[in-house]
Image (cartoon, rainbow, N blue to C red; front, side):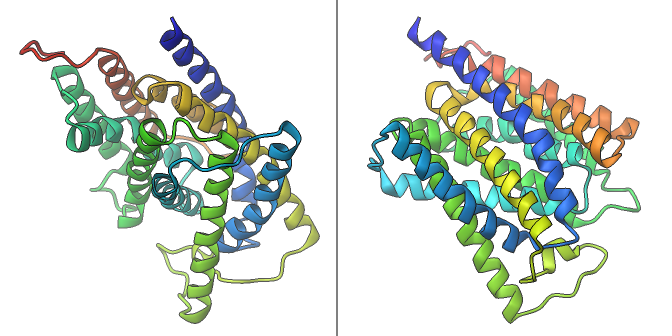
Length: 310
């Protein structure tokens, strides 16, 4: 009963997080002409981390870190995933970028097998095949507009899967406020390092690298800072819910609830950014969602020492 309750609350937490993240990420697209992705993450973290520490102080949270090395590894994977995701928003529609990131459940399945010996049956293999087909439909590698940059969100999905697995297996006893704060801190450090390197070794924008990706440092107006503050505030709330979800629920179960982001982001992008999806994009997204649902249902079955396939 306790296990089932954890899965239910994990799903609810994920739904709340996704409902916040979708509209909130439209702010990043609005900022892409005013700031670089590295500076954005650095400034956002400088806002978000103190906010989370204030929350921790008010609620009397224990900020002790139980497994520091696993915490660092988890947050490194999270940092890479989010840097890829936010960079991709500058040249891909939000829903398409989200579809790439949310190949995460497929990678959770693959990595669980490769690194932890989890049994893979027919359903899980079919989930990988269907999800891969969905990715290919969206990316359209034979299309004239395709470039290697379009693969980035899928790479982000792989790193997010590693982060989610590490959260459940090794960081489930950590304070969610500490986990979230460290996630923002790593993102800020990663953004600062990226901006520093771009300042030392400038990269010119081109057809594949947008100014949002190549810009190092720049002057930030009060209006831009206000949008960054709003983005940081709501991201802080969403990250707490997401982190808590993966502490109380099994990733192979609650991953499917993350697909609500595609609805949330799609609607927000349509309303605020006038981004529209083509039939091919919709087909690819549907295939990825179906794959995630299959992977989740297969993941609910306990591994057994038998020859019966899922």
